[in-house]
Length: 120
Image (cartoon, rainbow, N blue to C red; front, top):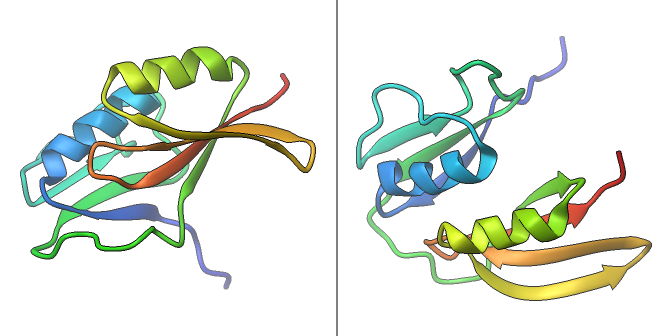
């Protein structure tokens, strides 16, 4: 039987705070039981995500660029990028390569993620 993809896990300083940012960005509720130590987004709500996001508090700070990051697709990328910035993301760079247009951003704890333009 093949493995299943259960969740994307973020190490962080405050799980509930980072989950709140991603909750707003993904337009999904923070799941019940969130605390500064552990939180999830996307397991509950009207339209649960196929893969939930999990946030776990760790004692050490992130010291390097993350080698794995989340790529999000949007039919209205410019608006979603501005919305991400309005809720606490920071724009890092814009790209137009390999036939794809995307923007790299940092979440409030410095984790990189991309929002790419997709066509409906």
